[in-house]
Length: 343
Image 1 (cartoon, one colour):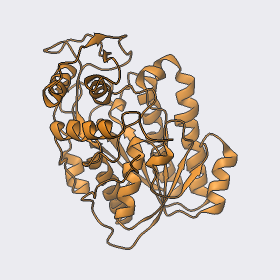
Image 2: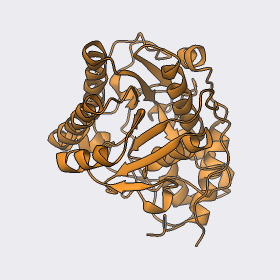
Image 3: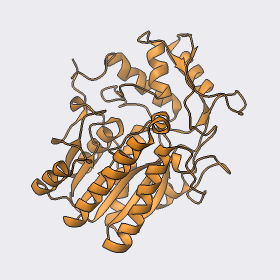
């Protein structure tokens, strides 16, 4: 079985020497790419993950297995390692599950973040990059969504992420820990050679599920709720995971250069409907796989896509990879690892 290795990312290299960085959730989909990008920028990285959704095979740095909701695990981590900065990705991420079980999302996303932030205060961490989400905006009042758009989450997942953003503001005011919250739109894609990719269990994201349907690995079920858009399916902004990883490296650097606590969108600026994505996958694979109607997921707005003007201005970042590249790279990964990462 192949060992995952990501291709090089054209990140913003560190200009001031490497930092000691903690990546929570670094065994997960986005976290694995962020860890690799930080290492390629010259930083020393420790991954902390409970492996509930992450995979050892995706980790390219020293791994500490533990849970942010367990004070003893957090205390042991900080007792053995000193960090200059934290990239905080560990969280529960399912919109639908958050509607069904909001208590879990408060306990994990909010409670775990409080444990982490308290440890950062105690141990002198100076900078935090937080994995936030476009779900903080809720229903779009105008498009594209920019950072000035009102925040009114339509599900507990988005609400817990917004609560952490608000805490980060107050922790800066009181304790001087500066942070950047990166509001992801829909992460997609894999390493360009297909060596590192997306392996959620269960998988709820459209692109990997449709690809697995095309490859005959599982039936594909459409879970997009009927909405008032031109083709009746939800419209989303997809951004390549390599571009997301690059933005985290850049966020660390601008914090180091003195940028204040902030929130920044990461998206492609283009909205694609669920039906368009499925059609594109069918065209690129040459397989007209059947589409079954599944149970609609609750709590999802009908249309969202980003303005990334602030990311370009503050981070010098702009997306490099389009939907075609996202799908092609993800397809390579699923062909290479049809059963997911080896465990």
